[in-house]
Length: 252
Ligand SMILES: [Zn+2]
Image (spheres, protein in one colour):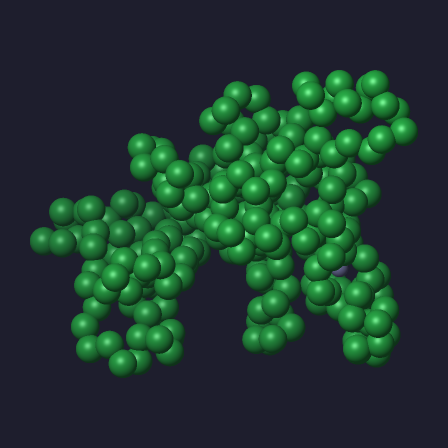
């Protein structure tokens, strides 16, 4: 209301409604910094590097679709692959959304989805997760020669939101898998958290498994965790891995 009042009494002043959405501790600090840089259009993306002649114009295309567009709004909003991610997540809650022109306008309009303190935290975390996951996916494509997997990215976004919600409130009752189960597009997914001996998070993982029984899901999750652990270089010097599961059938 204070922002609206300031905007109304001084029409010449551009007041951003999203300022209250930033730096609220709703995501890890590096994610908040990333979203702030995207909001301010200050990210070090290819189009910007091309504009200051660090890379050639021929190298400045979108890493997702290889389009020649150089704007950061294309990367996060208007690229077909980014649009699919946003559209999938909107469809998840039966929403229709017309993407605005810029990232800051996107965040401002996103705030209109938030009602109540809990809903606001969840939806803002979802926004943070979308932006950061698209950026990390972009980095994986450029630096690790990986490919864009829209559906897996959407599931990872939900797992990140669930993890951040639990970090904020341990009583948050849903895991990433719970959020995935509520989707129509994908019936079931698995996921987990890999931690070191100090409890620090090393990475999150998730993937879809279709429609199978709960015991098979638990086993697949453990199998996936072992594969991810073996593939991570950080685990190469570790002689033992502790697996925790809340399934008595799997443990026995
Ligand atoms: Zn693109």
